[in-house]
Amino acid sequence: MNEPMFEIKSEKKEKNYEKFIISPLENSYGDTLGNSLRRVLLTSLHGAAITSVKISGVKHQFSTLKGMKEDVVEFLLNLKKVKFSYSGDKPVKASLSVKVSGEVKAKDIKVPAQVKIANPEMVLAVLNKGAKLEAEMEIESGSGYSLAEERKTGTIGLIPLDAAFSPVSRVNYKIEETRVGRLTNYDKLILEIWTDGTVTPKDALVSASKILVSYFNQIVSPKKVVKEETEEVKDTLGPVGKLSVEEIGLPTRVANALIKSGYETVEELSKAKKEDLVKVRNLGEKSIKIITVALAEKGVKFGAE
Image 1 (cartoon, rainbow, N blue to C red):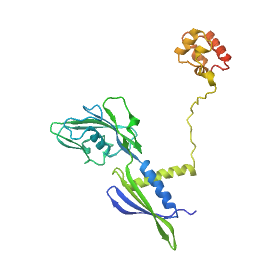
Image 2: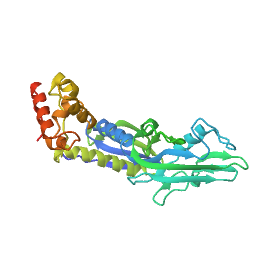
Image 3: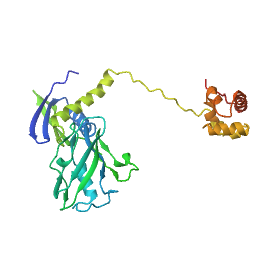
Image 4: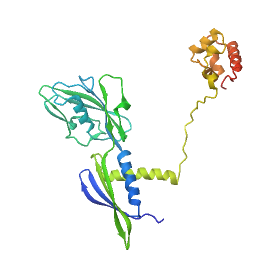
């Protein structure tokens, strides 16, 4: 197959929206590219969102705050709509402190220098005269969608939020026939991308394409995968391994010393090192010999070297 030769043209461009024409493509490659790009655009691009919030005077989300028109649930829903530009790996803190009546907007959130708010005019709440709204938030970067349940905490008043990290809000594509010379069986891919304003549609398209290329490169020129060495726990002892150390005929003193040190079953004991057991209180060389004999009677080899 020849190297693909096609053009990418921007047919229409508005705020946070762009329509691209990708043509001419070999027959069926319109769907191949369109479907792949759509999936990656919606699920794999990194963005940032508020993942938890603590509101002064509020213990849980099903509350009301004196002087605030919205209930807490409505306020939290509005917070989830605030869009941030942030590419750091670590979570960062943000705060909100408003003590005057009127609309509270996203631009009132105080964020670190490396964080930018894409929709600063977003209204979060409306306060009556004399009311105040104080909150602390955590902003994280990520991809896809993260449920609040994944970040449940026992801290009273700390409310985890569902987080939609993807900077791409919508993607449409359709395929039309196009011609190259006399041939009419070529595809024209019409791709529309809407973003949340933290990234341009063109940059989103390029980023999604790079992600796809990185996956295909691993097929074309695979890099060696370094596997982390982990000890696999194999159940090679069968029912014997489940026996407690009290059930294999050990003296009570020896059995109690083993249990206190965390060796409660034959399986755990068989993996212990002799030099570690000698250090256990009330155990010595004589006790080690007794343990070795008791395990041998059960057909178990003792002492990891």
